[in-house]
Amino acid sequence: MSDWLLIILRTLLAIAVLFIMTKLLGKRQISQLSLFEYITGITIGSLAAYTSLEMDQKWHLSVISLSVWVGVSLGIEFLQIKSKKARDFIDGKPRVIIKDGKILEDNLKKERLTTDELMEQLRKKDVFLASDVEFAIMEPNGEINVLLTKENQPLTPKHLGITVAPVKEPQVVIMDGNVMDEPLAVMGLNRGWLDAELEKLGVAIENVLFGQVDAYGQLYVDLFDDQIRVPKPQNKATLLSTLKKCEADLEMFSLSTTAPNAKKMYEECAKELERVIKEVRPLLIR
Image 1: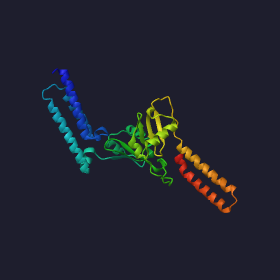
Image 2: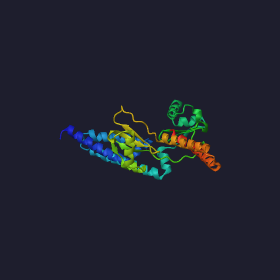
Image 3: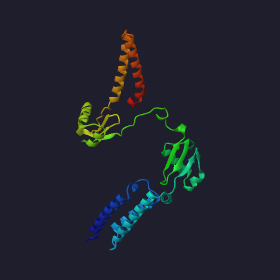
Image 4: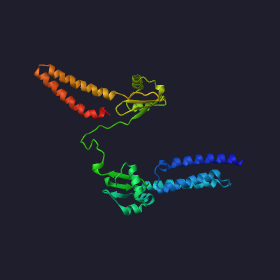
């Protein structure tokens, strides 16, 4: 067999072996890497390259070496799952580098991190003042996580004492012109509902590149033709206007009737509906 054909076959073999072994190692190898995982990734790549290019008759020994590396990596991962001490020794411990707005210089030196690098990481978290940070921690994978002081944290419904209902995960129901039945079922919908919504928009399903249903049951679509703009759903706006119309009708009924009991009932209903509109308005104007 000629050398060029042998290299092609061995390269394909190396790709297949590397893919299978990476699948065995799991997603951690392609996410933020720990120190050992970083070393493993480099070594496995080098061994795979050797397997595909080395013309020595004993090239298969590199496959054995590759298998040993993967076996050791799997063993260490299982050890880390079972033992906190092993995790701390292999991956290291998180370290606080900012506390109460004060940069801890000693911890910064231990991590061999400059203030410029620290500020760069803070800016990635949309933090531009170190004094705005309650504390910042450098994780074992090198990422810096930040907790802002209370006065600098974004305002949430919890801060206002407002209880909000849980939000359903948006679901992709159309992809490349094909209906995705399982996401539709997750939202409690069916193809009949989808066809009706597309008819309202004046869109044929085969022209839809991407369709998604949000937590409120509204359908958003993106067409293959980028020149055509589809209007956004108006269900929430329509509901808000309907509620306001009902409130206005109740107030009109209370003014037009002469019966005291009916007048009082209409007034109370109008006030109650006004209270409801104030509560749901933030949800309906987004």
